[in-house]
Image 1 (tube, rainbow, N blue to C red):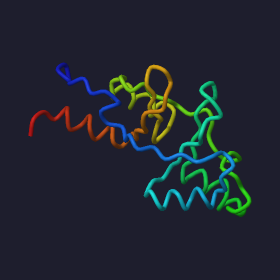
Image 2: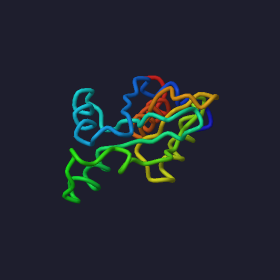
Image 3: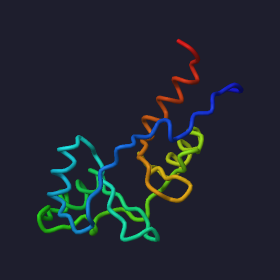
Length: 138
């Protein structure tokens, strides 16, 4: 692995990020997830000084469904994760992999140098891309 290519997180991330307002009900968030075929939604920030938040299917499973709460009466702000881990778009994916693994996370939000949201990246996608690059030309 001495000649590993430098692959940036920004090269692997998904640029299309779906967001919801903090007051969105869990049912509405689930409908949006189904519509866009995603398993997470970013919660919109109040302003540029606010931190990013995220809701994932496992949050809904544990905090709403398993807890026997109504998805129509729970707002995403009640169960969202905030703050969430962010990765700089120029970070090498091996460090992105290490960071997500260290915190036991399956995804991270990707930001530019000014902390603007530019994408989302999954541990799976980074590991597969790293493995493909490490295997060399096919």
